[in-house]
Length: 325
Image (cartoon, rainbow, N blue to C red):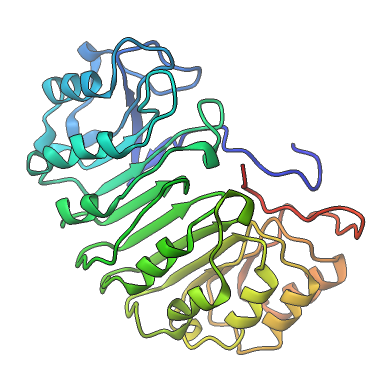
């Protein structure tokens, strides 16, 4: 367990995606714990979520891995893809890797879920990941229902319309404000779950409470049932805004986790509109006193509340979000 006040690092790749077991496809030896399979013992194409990875220092680049994957697995049946480390030695932007995938988009008519940069801190810290414009991915895969993007450095998104996307998550130690505004300006009529790890200014997380207003207004995303505004340095301000946000009555679950939420923000949240209709409220990694934690539980007796990872609020120490570097 990390010491109190210390950030949390992403140390493990996901083991399930789209309710499928993740299998790493690589031309290199797997890292410890990876669900790696040799080419002659691969599962059926639609029975796994496929994680494509390039080993550090490998002589086989992503193009080689991609070509071998297309030859070994029927792309027409693949339902989920995860992009692991895509560089050979030095970190490079993910743009060329995404372009390779987009060029073969027509070969993946069944693809429902894509995870861009399922990379752990062992390979690259989240805020060191070199990202790029992900807009072409959404345009190339109109059948996509779930998209996860990890990393914010160099990340670009332009407003788009996507009629089938139901889940969208940005995991970042610093999410650029123009990406937040592009999500808000996009037409996503089917979106049910939205999670934004806003991060810190030091790593490019320059969004403000004004940038979040379209999500809180309840008019842009008619199908939204879960909203996560997380990992923020201004979590108290977010909580105060959520307390009176028109979107809240349509939600089934809400997450203000991973940030620097204090008693001030929690009190504002509880003093606002009723939250008893929620199935769950995630506040894990917070700076609430024991008394405020008890107040939250008493105010929401029928709601599943996560108040784990309580941090000590020492005025002499800096408050940390859960994921930064």
